[in-house]
Length: 470
Image 1: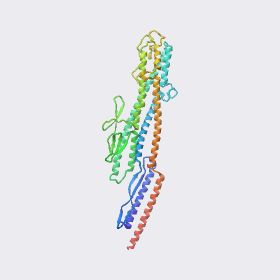
Image 2: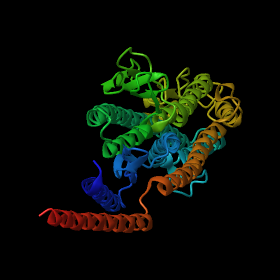
Image 3: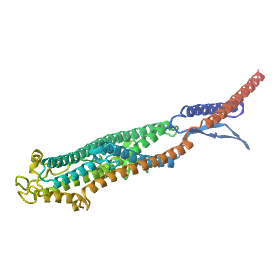
């Protein structure tokens, strides 16, 4: 179509295009405070040309697409950083649980008894246990000295039992958290497949772009990356692939794998993929942080606490069993139990301190050879304590846990700064700038007014032509 009618049609298309640009600018401005929104731009192109002899005429403008302003490489980097942040956050949260639960027991923030643990921490109790040995050694026949020693031994075993119980409760709490995070992950995996299906429906035929749905998908992918390691790629068919390691979770609108939480016979739990039952061992995300805490700091505390308990049982029972009580009896164990959870002082000795075997020979009330051997054993390095004494073993356990807390806190602070920097970088690319949108608004307004003016002029010219034909 050429002539005045063609010009009128061209003006109408221009008017519709500028109107759409105004709407899009308003849409961007409305989402200026929406962190999950990426600004959109209207891509336009000139329409077909009309050939008239040796001349050609343009027919105006038309909308090609509504494009999101996104940097996919930066999006992938942010997902990776979110996995690292999720790992450190969950680990730090678990360490704070440990500090709250075990701090008063282990004297995590120090070893001088001057903090929240006070005189009830293991360090103070080991020192008290050792001090009461010296009191018995100074007066082996004293019932009060014997009773004080037994009370100190009982306080020590109670605290080791409490440490074991607190560590087990923390493990149960972490296991519950793992189950919760695994369930959240499965829900997000299904949500990604649903969004892929919705996007495919909207964009079928290539006439529309589901930008809002794509923004939602980016948000869900980032939420999932906080929970577990995640990669996104494209299959040969063109469908989106969401992977964790080499395992494909989502292909297009199909969920291929989800997480199974399965209990182990010893009371622990493991993660597997539901499709082939292959093991899933996350190294990143909140799941990775929880497993790292369980197999690292928490297990180290449990292992060293067990070592202390078994050291008391083996070393002191061997020495005590060779001694003699006031009544001449021998062969009795000082501690009963097989591990930290069951460790306690022999109940008969608790009831009767005269059964404490401190002499190396019977009928010698002043003999303190056995208690002296205990004092020596308390201060000596022991092979089953990794060539350390009891107090050093406990000090190592405390200092390692405290160092882990400090290091994780510092790493988390650094990681949050890095992620924040990348978020700001993305905001500068994809975020809505009010100044820029206001400029766009004025441009579309002026173009709209010009298009309307063109239509008005053509309308007048058509009126003149029609009046001439009458």
